[in-house]
Length: 238
Image (cartoon, rainbow, N blue to C red; front, side):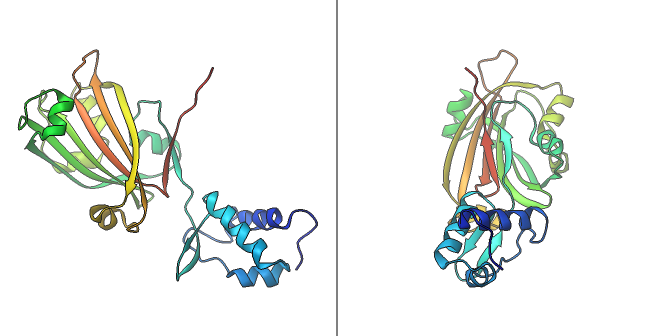
């Protein structure tokens, strides 16, 4: 089969994109080999490789050395300039968010927490760890620190649901936040819990939450997302 006139690379990209979007190939399916595309569409090896490279940049596919080319899950986007619970945001997108392995305890604040909360080192704070899933796929590891100004339950099951909803039920409302974004490589804990590669880029979001007009933070969260599955965006207007 020959591709119609036009830029061969663009035509091949559109063909493969259409097959993925229409479900001919599903997430985690292996795509045909490059040589198969060469023969099927009568194009050069350079054209196929260039098309595959572009599809990878667009987030449609992922090449894994020694295994092949796989259809990749489209990144989940979340607005950065918005205060809303992760659970509500994902439900609005028609996705199924779940939380597993929630664990809450009371610890002594380390140096970083003490500086953020403006409290002495070793002051008791809540530490909550959770793994977030979207459609049953692990996507992020959350570590949250909360001041002990308010008494919270130590029942882990409560935190397998939205933290912000639970806080609201306790008349605690986070209505101002500061967020900082950075990146790193996946460490051992993330590889094990998020089922990602050792060289997987990790998107790190640090959030500091405030109650009402208080200048003293109440929440400090470190969210570590699998970079190939998640992204943040923000819109600016002049």
